[in-house]
Image 1 (cartoon, rainbow, N blue to C red):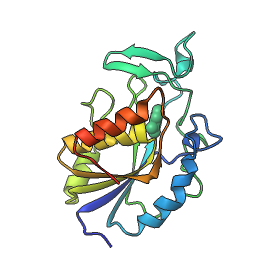
Image 2 (image 1 turned 120 degrees about the vertical axis):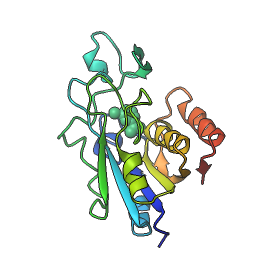
Image 3 (image 1 turned 90 degrees about the horizontal axis):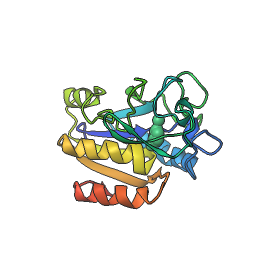
Image 4 (image 1 turned 180 degrees about the vertical axis):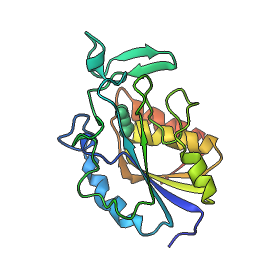
Length: 201
Ligand code: VGL
Ligand code: ZN
């Protein structure tokens, strides 16, 4: 068992990010047994859930004429327009049925404001609006994070970069992650994480 100051953060292991889902990540479901085996090792365990209203601004379907995976400008900067995914209460938004969710201490939902996307578990995409996870972890005395889940180059990377910026010691366990890899986004995310002092193992 790892010490009390270390938390396992499991990012977005939801049906829509797994094969057959609306925004399927190649081999996304392969992370499930790896994460299941890690859960009992950690004193603090947090799951995140991408949780969008149907009218969410990150969905291409809500921008007439826009193709999925095209780019748009939001008040907070450039934004990928995604296929409709992880709609609140849908099967796609549910955790992968094989994921052991009972051991989790906290499930944190993000992306529930229609006008702003939220890749990171800590801040929405304006990098300012907090999810509350920072306060939760600090209140429990957590200083070190191990990040796992989907997708390496979006929600995992944004979470890792925010966590490093907030002063946590951050490790990303790559064998427990899978990537979307949109136009070189995986290489760019790995590079940014390395530069921010995130340990990639
Ligand atoms: C994610 C794109 C849109 C993720 C969430 O979990 O990486 N990616 N929403
Ligand atoms: Zn999303």
